[in-house]
Length: 104
Image 1 (tube, rainbow, N blue to C red):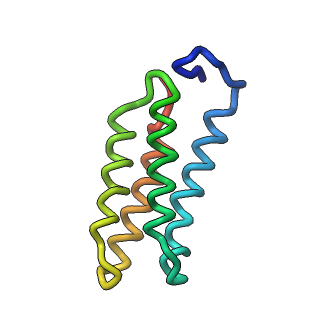
Image 2 (image 1 turned 60 degrees about the horizontal axis):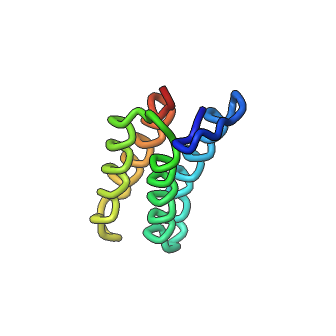
């Protein structure tokens, strides 16, 4: 795994980072269920993923766009919206990260 600036990371770093991102996004579920400010936490997740894209070369762009788009769509939900849609979107994002947000 190499950054745009030429810095390299040891083997396994990509897998660890993907796990970290999955856990960050999954955490959106209990935050909303507990009535906490999930939109603020969502912004933090989006910033992290955008930063990942800014730092690394040759990221699988399609998966990254889909993840960002799905997470951004959560911002349009109201508190009254169906939690099923919110949950489904989060789980889809974690699956996309697991499947394809990788350095090529």
